[in-house]
Image 1 (cartoon, rainbow, N blue to C red):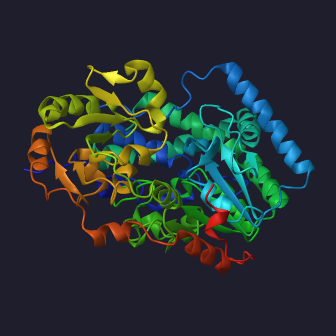
Image 2: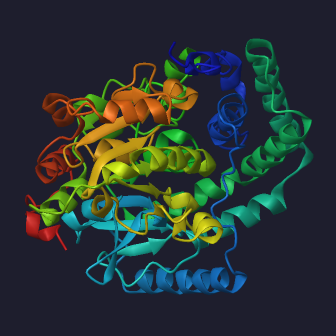
Image 3: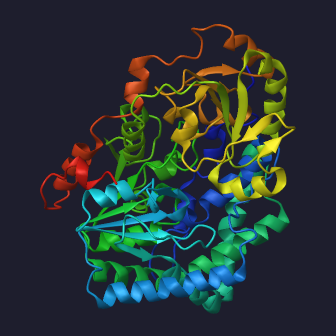
Length: 494
């Protein structure tokens, strides 16, 4: 019997499927409040109902204060110098995160955003979040502003401006969704977490006017025609999107990972999905990896398949190889590394005689913690992947295994076989699993014995990854009024 989740996304979205949520707005700006706390609330529910381990959104544990202070100071100076030299204007403003930075040819390349930025290097400026407060340099893309100074000022202003009215408004919204969660799901965050949500939302309400003004000022300096955002549908970008829309800037999200029928960030309750006001808090366009992804979500955005620049870049560099495919590569999802260790131990015991090495690849969010706890190897037989770049690891993989990692999709056409672990989390996101599935290590071992099982049909793979991303991206920008000649591949490849 197939394992099924204890909750479906449709059940979870019913909590927000009420017009009353749209009544909660910032009194000064009119911006909706629910987008700013939605993901945190939803992930609390998913943590309790789907995961064996509570979700922890912190990615900065163990960061030395001295490093954070030094990096922040350098960010202030860098932004000031870029403004003084008059290099801050651009037709395309791109928001990204340092989690995507990788070392390529001695310099950092952000796999998520830099290919787009380098396609139009003189017309694009990137505003990047820090990851673990590492300084992001030296790097290939040098037209960069750091987001941290603006974020810090907005956060400080918000804390100083919180008043009882903000707390009371936040409390009413959290009480509404918590009560609906209790009635519809038999679940609520509980008193302690409700206070956390109320406190967080109250600060966001108090800081929203200043945040809007600061983003208006940033866009006035840059004067973009297009704003490219990462994770824009998640909600916290709503204030920036408002600032951009007010200035006639086209708002666009570019795909950075798996999107699915069960992805809470890209699917909404009917009351929100059909609301013009809620739509105004979301990007107008979404640049997807390929046609296969376009009907996997209900977000009211215009889908355009572009492709995955970094995947194309890595595949072009790899070329042909005679490297032996002798590993079972297990991709962790960043939340429950322990379950992947257990799976790996079972596989190692049953596949070692076949000459296959078992390798676990931690999610970027957990690499520091995993390294501290496990080092480079577990039990002397299970290797922890040390490669910065996924494709280096996939190249030697006979089998790639995961629940929901985007890497499972990226391995299509490179690794021999792909398998999705049939768990409540996987079924929550994909009620119909897109890959051959298994429920136990023993079942997976049995599937591996059949040479034909686990191989992805070519037509499905081609739908996942559109070809010619450079031409596709150039055509999209042209429709948005960004001038310039069609870039060449040489402008992108470092």
